[in-house]
Image 1 (tube, rainbow, N blue to C red):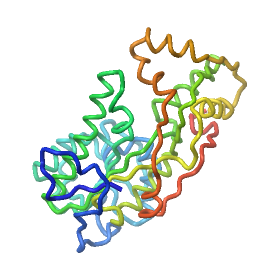
Image 2 (spheres, rainbow, N blue to C red):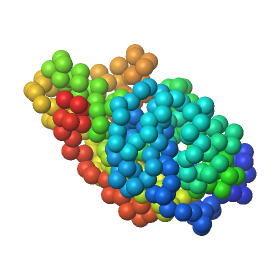
Image 3 (cartoon, one colour):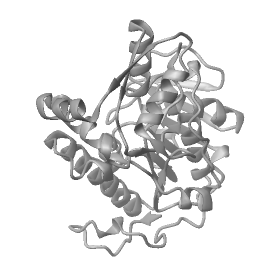
Length: 309
């Protein structure tokens, strides 16, 4: 668990070190009685979260850049931060799966005056890519951390409860940009590349992240940055093998030895970061997730529906 201390030097980021929450709003009504605004609602987390919010009885407003199909109990808005349609200002709770800088800019402008709580997703890339050999990935890690810090500051200033979830690799709704494209290419070409990789992985299902968001709305993790990974840790090579096994058709396994991975990492700049991390552990500590939110993610056992096949 990590929490932002209100007395922390604004130019320092030692708030990322574990400590007890310093900002928890003690007088806050049940979020189910108000309007929940979901930003990035067409994402894979939103796919699972929206029906759960409706079942909980909340008024649900969902924001998307593109028109979306009508859904029972969901008021879809077309637009984007930091200038969404005016009705977004009625939100009393926000769940955000979009870039944090736009959300922060909107909140700093005084938007949503009745807002009481915010739950957002960042990424474990905020930690895993800090020392990446690729400058763009290091910049991404810094941007994620800066966004988390800025969100905490504006929420503390406005007395808004906030929680940041840092998920590992997310899968499950066929909307991710990592395992789903890999699975679909293999299904199309009937060849599945299996790169050697000893680094441990902890992929987390999007539905488990949505469950964590739902639980966080109750405030048990207010003022905290919570890591969330899947319920199983396995070598990267085993993760790829399970994706292959989940496909609805046979594919030819193409083993990619360590030597080839190393050469490709040196010669193909856009692959340097991902290939280098095949030897690194990319894990989350779920202790606070389980203790504060009582969320226990599933192991990695995908099926064809995870890839939309």
